[in-house]
Image (cartoon, rainbow, N blue to C red):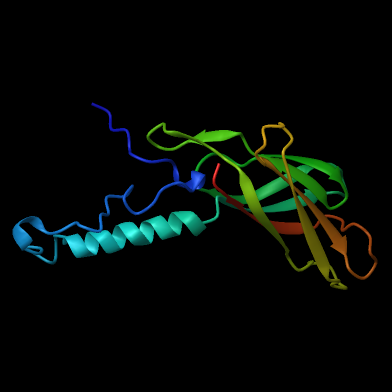
Length: 183
């Protein structure tokens, strides 16, 4: 028999401590704590664990990615590293020098095949220091987009500028962190 977990996948941000088995009235069976504290967990410890996991799932980013814009020889951005709660790296398109848009799927399944929609509510882009001299400061801006017109943001557009010239940056390396919110 397959197990279907209670609650939603964490990127939906709808779970609380009771979803994880916490209960303000939880007690140890017959008021006896762990029989072996090296292998057992007591009700008070379990409730702390459930509360902390609920807090973590509310604040953890959905995905973090480092990518390199391919502007000198125009092409799609190269995703160098991608870590996420679920799924593969999103589709990236080049809009122009230092300007890319990444699009995630509208929903993903967790390891138990429970599906959760995504709604990107926050994104932060950080520019890596240029490797070529002279090093000029870069600044990135992000724009959340609902390209599928579902009322939920599934795309992030990142534009990178050279502060010294005011022009779009060429071939910048960026780390993008995306956080989802309540669907």
